[in-house]
Image (tube, rainbow over all chains, first blue to last red; front, side, top):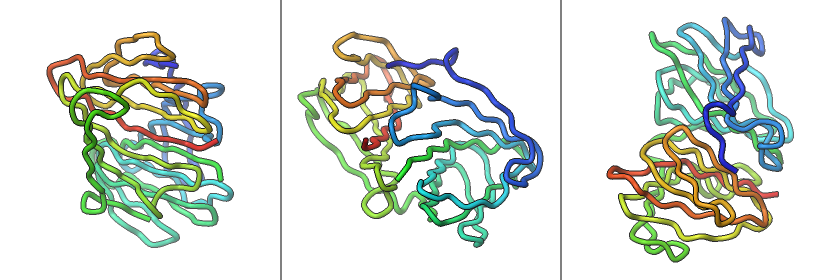
Length: 115
Length: 115
């Protein structure tokens, strides 16, 4: 199946996981379009200063593929600077957060795979 | 876990699935870095005229997220033009192929999720 811009679902969430500001989701795949064992396949945009607070994943792994901008993540509480071209995995039982520390949008692909 | 350029594994495959020319893989996650239930998470580059031949996926779904360039896919044999910004899913029991029909590289993220 092929999906294009008009198929993508846009969503904004405020103070996600206790974070700051708005987080914009562009769901590239959603609902029946998602593969089995995949519950999120979305482009996420954080404006400068915005963040997703630290949270744990259970029974799933989240991959962040950083596309644009610069930011800071925590990986089980450890702060690490990230930029376009970085990838991050957060496996079951582990925690992460992400914050835009730059002066332009931080854009990443977020993929959550069950298991 | 954080992965950067020096962690990515580069691989070239010729005439993949009966296709034309070389296909370059940049494995953003590989081996132990891959999430459970994920067997491929790679940026794929096809030079102009190169292709991956038609093939069926069984017991897994592949997602193509087109990043740069233009091309043509087949989706269960049906030809469809694609470009940067398109997404494609090929679920278990279904087939696809991809060909670079443009004059610059066709770049896509390929994610294979088991299930």
